[in-house]
Image (cartoon, rainbow, N blue to C red; front, top):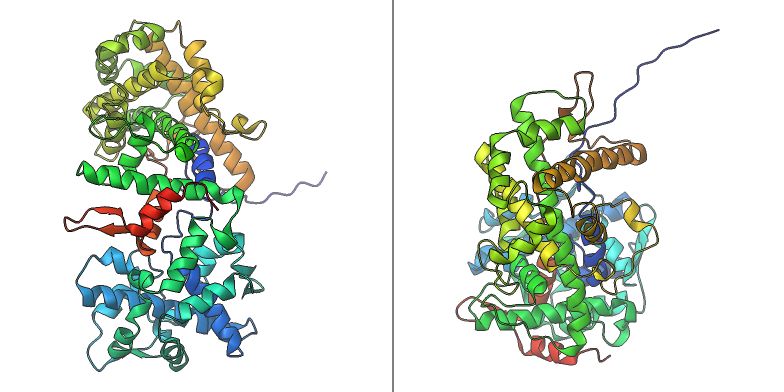
Length: 550
């Protein structure tokens, strides 16, 4: 029998995301609540700039999708960012208002800032895919190819792909283009692209294209407002969750301003979870937004479950890695970890020999009211502490505090939880969805009532470390290895036992909140008052009052 041998290249080791598959339900929920906005579609003006650019090229005869077209496109993409960066430097205001999240801004900010009077910028020095002085972006269609194309196709603004070319749609894309063109010197812009050169004077003359000035173009503002708030041509029942979420954010910004409190992702999540404002008063909700708010509450509950379980996973891997030991199984690691002083101290705070059920019942003695989410031992604050501590240097004290905060968060969630079949409200998931994501609010409800009910807190912690920590991670990493041929193991088997590759921090999902806020600012629905706080403009207030009207 002939035998042949060959070297097998190991799969590439990558960082990976969601190592416990606990964030997936959160991502699923917020994806439904903000369709048409993603974690990388930060600026409203790109929704009109890209269709305008494709339309302008089409009208000037550049219709063949080739290297010449792509190079012109990349120069224009660069120029748009340079205009925003120059306006930011000239205005001496908040850089984020002008050039925040502009494509290639990390490379182009200094270029625009350092441009001397009388000098010019050669756009191809930054736009060329090969041979650029400092390439502004890798994707051949810049920010459109990397970030915006999928969304613009979904909204029927553009069509096509990066392989075969992109076209604007006649009904929607062309209307977008026409409204944008009415608000700036398009001839000067396109001349700079053709000349492959732009001066400081020309950048200043094009400042009306800066994203901060979108609201000065009434036609563009109107069509983008209709887009984001699902009105007129853009009315679509499936997209109404986007309108309702944006209305919810606008309403909350007004209430927070009255309490002199910052509008932030943390605050939005906390208010949605607790149904309360920072001062503990109830968040009054218009009838049309009640269902939307309930879905955001489910998101927040799942998010806090996610941080608590990530915290425990961090603590056990952190301690195991620091000890430099090797065990053959997750159970052996958990048994060793439970003997460590920091774990014992954390359990002593709660009652190591109390049952989980008793700990939940006894939480009434220390757990603040749901509305008191600014209290330091409320679960809202505990999860922020978990995330913060996991970013700090290794120490037994940090691990103790993370374990304590994680267990208290789980106890709080159990104490306040709905019945098992109500945890996601009217959110419907595909049949079998949770088989791939075993850590979720439904399984939490089941284990709270069944698996953990008679376990002591020490036994419950062991169960969590093994079953919702290391074992879940190994299954998730194996699934990614099989499906993507990439190794995302943070702990993996070796000939010397289980070894830690890296200790992943406990991190929040990013529910598109910051992107939504920036878009609301860009279209003029949010405005800054004299004290610097953001609140609804007249446009924003009219949008909140719109309700679900078409």
